[in-house]
Amino acid sequence: HKNDISYIESYLNEAASIVEAKYTLNLMKENSLTDQLTGLYNRRYLEEILDKIAASTIREKSLLGILMLDIDYFKKVNDTYGHDAGDAVLKELAKTMINSVRESDFVVRFGGEEFIIIAPETEKEGAYKFANKIREIIEKTKFMYKKTRIKITISAGVAQRKETNSMQDLVKLADDRLYKAKNSGRNRVEIN
Image (cartoon, one colour):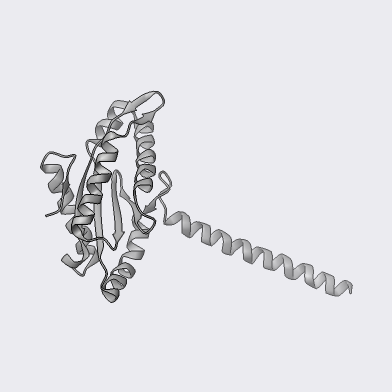
């Protein structure tokens, strides 16, 4: 029996290290797909799921809206209040967006102060209204850093999957419309 117990202990020690390694790998993968500052999905996650989403929407002939959002004059926030304040604004903005979307939507920090919302089962006009709703919520929100109230606005571009079958082209279309919104005065949403 001593040999059995010794064997079992040895087996359990080896199994524990394998389980720990798998847990660590899963944690590392999860961490590599989320933005550390905001907790949102990151660009890498978006790149991993874009083709799956495209295939699903084409197969099911379903709708899909893409919203590309960017904070207006974010550099001014960092320059005026400091990078810690900018980080606080990004964290609060992420929470605001998460609280403004449906459970089926994905919010992704695309980079810097740029975000994408993937909105399944949303046609273009609905995505436009949705983007405007989020824009208005953010415009009215008082972002706080320490005791300082910081006001921000966003610009957004909207595209819909039936405009192109390529998800990369769809993201590019939303991005082009975002920059049209920026060049047309900011704090607005562009759909064409």
